[in-house]
Image (tube, rainbow, N blue to C red; front, side, top):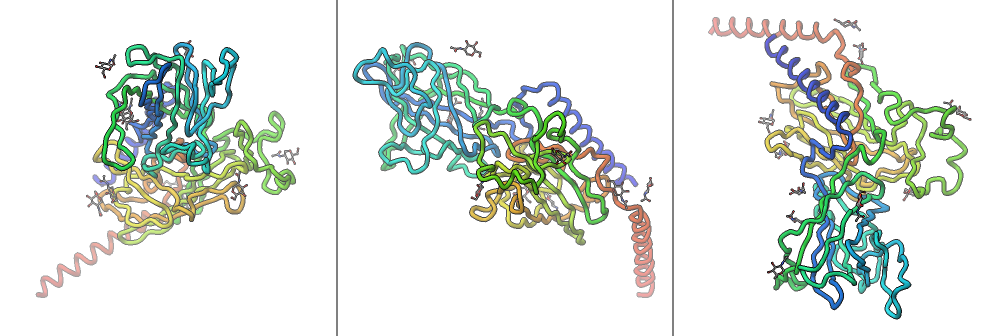
Length: 452
Ligand SMILES: *[C@@H]1O[C@H](CO)[C@@H](O)[C@H](O)[C@H]1NC(C)=O
Ligand SMILES: *[C@@H]1O[C@H](CO)[C@@H](O)[C@H](O)[C@H]1NC(C)=O
Ligand SMILES: *[C@@H]1O[C@H](CO)[C@@H](O)[C@H](O)[C@H]1NC(C)=O
Ligand SMILES: *[C@@H]1O[C@H](CO)[C@@H](O)[C@H](O)[C@H]1NC(C)=O
Ligand SMILES: *[C@@H]1O[C@H](CO)[C@@H](O)[C@H](O)[C@H]1NC(C)=O
Ligand SMILES: *[C@@H]1O[C@H](CO)[C@@H](O)[C@H](O)[C@H]1NC(C)=O
Ligand SMILES: *[C@@H]1O[C@H](CO)[C@@H](O)[C@H](O)[C@H]1NC(C)=O
Ligand SMILES: *[C@@H]1O[C@H](CO)[C@@H](O)[C@H](O)[C@H]1NC(C)=O
Ligand SMILES: *[C@@H]1O[C@H](CO)[C@@H](O)[C@H](O)[C@H]1NC(C)=O
Ligand SMILES: *[C@@H]1O[C@H](CO)[C@@H](O)[C@H](O)[C@H]1NC(C)=O
């Protein structure tokens, strides 16, 4: 009884925590703090590698230190405001989207004369003489946990009409990072210790003449007004499938917003090119009561003596999106005893050192690392086998369901805890049965002992 009470208390304290976190989120909507990745950021580093007669040449490197938030196609866009009248003479590995008004230049025309240039990455397949290391990936940057080698992007910029020494150069201001939509907020550029560069043959280090860093952090609330994913639940011990809450990501309303969603059989979907992503990345969503582009289903599938098994299915309801390098992050107290995982990659995330209850899961390369657009192929699935920790394990009170799930770094909406599938009432009689067997076996062993 003691243990049971304690369990109950634990669950409610978890619910309290979740509730208070929700409150925190609700009341500081621009806060960029992510409890599962508290140090996540994208750092933009400018290294001045040489001074020129009228400015400098810099290598700009973007490191994605976020564990599970990547930048997928069509990639990043980086902007800033020049402090004075700087121009960009040339770029390697990236380009500005507009040249701007360069009419005051005769002869040698700069690459870009805008006060606020906007830079995009070049596409893969760019000729080698126009590349530098880590450039030319179409603006795609992997997340740190998933693929640290590719969690970086870079380009080189030659700046004119700028300061020509570390005392006269003025740092650019007002950095904006789009990925490709909103969500990131960048701090001011700060001078830091000059970084070292290893030569191509790996035998010599050179040092940047000057380095400054800009740190950008993500906030889901800046990125989009409504959630982008939801969670549904089911279990072997109860026939009820608890669906995503209605209208999680918007409401299906034919009258006020006709055409906000499409039925899977609609004629519209047969139109050629209907899947092509639009300029503003507006989704084309299959009509569902929740209206989310992505749903994650957590099914408690089997119960063994010492193990239990969960099936996780991720479904795409957006006809205009293939999610490349998708990932989910799930929080459940049993992740410290994950025993086997089928057809997904796994990495434990331990932002608070000892608490090992958060897992990052993502697809296997060339097998299911792409979550295809809505339709028959628009899902990926896996099964997870957990070893029971007998001190905490229970099917009661929704313990077997996740505490939190993210898809591509965005928090997915869970059903309210009171809607979770219940253990049927026969479980109490089962417990009585168990107790009975226990008493019987005790009696048997006692009599055996007495006999001996
Ligand atoms: C950015 O992330 C790195 C790596 O997690 C961390 O060391 C650094 O402190 C972060 N910077 C800021 C300003 O949060
Ligand atoms: C500047 O950014 C680089 C990564 O781009 C990072 O390694 C370095 O620690 C940062 N420096 C400071 C002082 O934050
Ligand atoms: C400029 O560079 C020189 C030599 O590298 C260094 O001694 C000096 O402190 C630097 N000044 C500033 C303002 O960074
Ligand atoms: C930077 O942005 C802020 C707010 O958007 C604006 O007030 C400021 O004038 C901008 N600075 C420059 C140099 O553009
Ligand atoms: C929405 O409108 C279309 C045609 O205008 C109709 O076929 C469809 O049944 C409507 N859907 C709902 C949920 O009302
Ligand atoms: C998704 O990928 C498939 C196969 O590569 C392609 O046919 C389809 O057009 C893509 N859809 C989108 C929305 O990019
Ligand atoms: C977390 O638990 C998993 C599964 O038991 C284990 O593989 C991993 O090493 C643990 N990580 C830490 C940091 O304890
Ligand atoms: C579960 O994991 C924890 C921490 O990794 C460990 O102390 C414990 O013995 C494990 N329990 C089982 C049943 O393996
Ligand atoms: C299954 O769970 C639901 C709550 O989601 C509950 O209403 C229902 O009574 C449960 N079914 C059984 C057989 O216990
Ligand atoms: C199970 O028990 C609860 C309370 O003990 C009761 O409210 C509920 O109706 C019962 N469910 C079924 C399916 O008998």
